[in-house]
Length: 114
Image 1 (cartoon, rainbow, N blue to C red):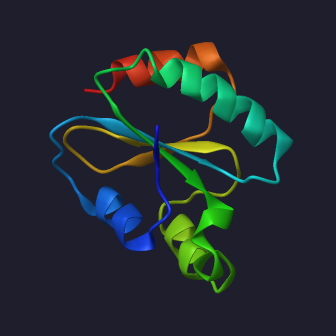
Image 2: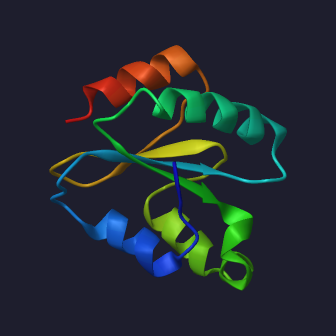
Image 3: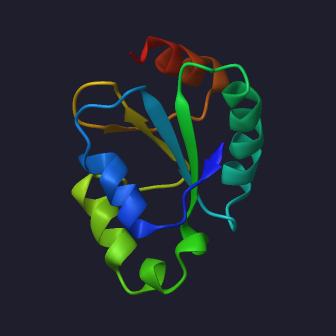
């Protein structure tokens, strides 16, 4: 999993409508116990998903940007309302927010990305 702690890079990933490979961004908080547990499961899952670019976004890593509203504005634009969430990045097309806490359902969604 590639850490994602730069707002410009995050926005670039969301703005791309054509990608060399599909991907997913795991979005969570370091203060959220459910996020931590799911992040651990997601890391194990990511090790098996070689066809995807996988990113890890921890809101607190954005520092002041998270607290001054810049990150929240991006979340609002894509309708991301809670942690943990995943942003699915298809090879072609706009990304969408996927709210899944079940590893089996998440695996199925990731396998379907093309």
